[in-house]
Image (cartoon, rainbow, N blue to C red):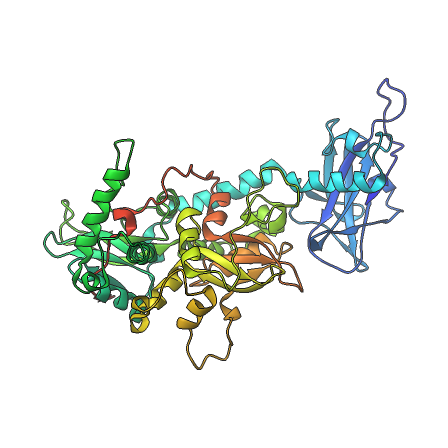
Length: 511
């Protein structure tokens, strides 16, 4: 991995011997054999590069160079190449990359020193690799340029750009019984719907899979005031009011859950829409238009999601992805997603995963307590079998299955079978629903996959074994692209009307 290179063009610095600065060179674009050559080797020596552990498409080598200006390029399977994402110029050796090194090294000299007591060459190599993982080596300027260009796009385009040429949107009336609302969601194949109040002629909230989870947990609570019989006639409005009263009682700080309905107008920028989704921890934001100043006679135009906004980004930069240097980075080398902690890693938080024999009640509790939207289902070796998502909970509305089961007695495996077609060719585990990627996949590739309708997350797996290594969600990608830190987990849920007190009738609008 290491190569020490002397440059006879170096000028003395007043100290004994040249000052060498460790510099990591990376070729992240694949190949079978990759070599590095440059002005620091007089263009005569080809330094072999090694595949990066965990990133089979990326090759690296660390060279000890003297401060100053250097040129270099890569030989990939016998063909001379340069990295278009790094600075380059045309010179005597064709198009070459350039770099200027100052005295501050990329990697601490003490880490590279072979004289460090009690440390073998293998330990030195591991320490350098950990340092490189924590500091991917991407120039801050590249990150800033990429984020700026994405921000300009999102700021100058509006929610109107998300509207399809044709389609339908569904809204539910708050006077609808909870039981019927469950069935509407299941039959329409949607996991959420805005709520319409005929009395006020306004949209007043949304019904999502979170509501279904809360109601199922309420039914499973022996001290609950909600029974199966009451579920037949209990309206969405009544359920909502009961939950809001409960939240006010439990709030020790004198506050309450937000009552305002999270929505956006068609003229709001895509960046504002994305921020509303991220900051309010909702999966979609209804786009509502009213031609009246007082907001009367609202029209539901669309349900905006991060997937649709990401699709706009991918479409806009489809033929100019080179203008976003970060897109070519392997997702395993950037601070993106949630990962299985390394053994012995301090303060490592375990990734939420369950075995097929775990109870459905355990999964629902994990959705609520860990605030996750999906749970990988794995075998004893942590290899991916399936995934159980919050949206899968609506399958329990099929034939009123929720009325015949006990959350603590039915397993995840059985719950998955309830939502599966009896003639399904996929067997007991519906692996085709699992959208996966590798650590070595580029951010560009991950974004394109997440931009597909219905894909809200990718499970990062180990090639071959399919052992789960992490999860990358749409929210993770947007927080990275527009530089939003994770918000403090002040509440278990931050959704309109608790997003769990709502269900309702079906208004289908064509446009």
